[in-house]
Length: 198
Image 1 (cartoon, rainbow, N blue to C red):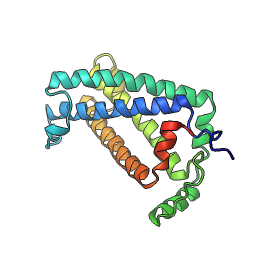
Image 2: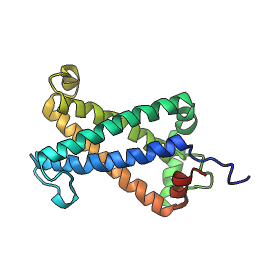
Image 3: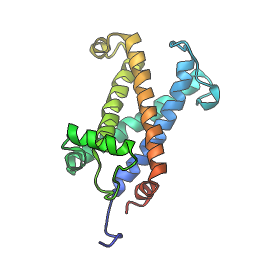
Image 4: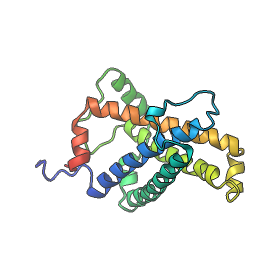
């Protein structure tokens, strides 16, 4: 097959991926600075890896990136559904296939021969990121406009609980990014696919 004709990632997906990457980096770094204002979990994030300089500056960065992530994320989900990509790439799910792929990953034998096909570990990881991003947005709404979203605040068991949910959902997303970057380092051609699409 001609590699020029093998579209691994369409242009809209690549654009949204890189916009999300920018938004996540800004959100995490500014979020760490916001967290440091209270350090409600009893530790502080080193200032050198935070963004904003002070609480007000961090909030401005955070809100700007929040809109980018929310709008880009909604468009990403809508296009995935509209094009049928969501069902094609991420379903069906299988516990047996997941266990097989996890075992292969541990042994260093997880196949990456077909860049258009996601293995079960990838499917679950990307679905997790989608759901985690929704949780981040919902808990973030409670932190931002708690009075305007009373039902959402109660569903998250109050403001303080929403703050913890938001922090740990962010930590989970940061862990995903770290694993994602490690996998890209192990299979570097995946980065080329996300840049060139072919």
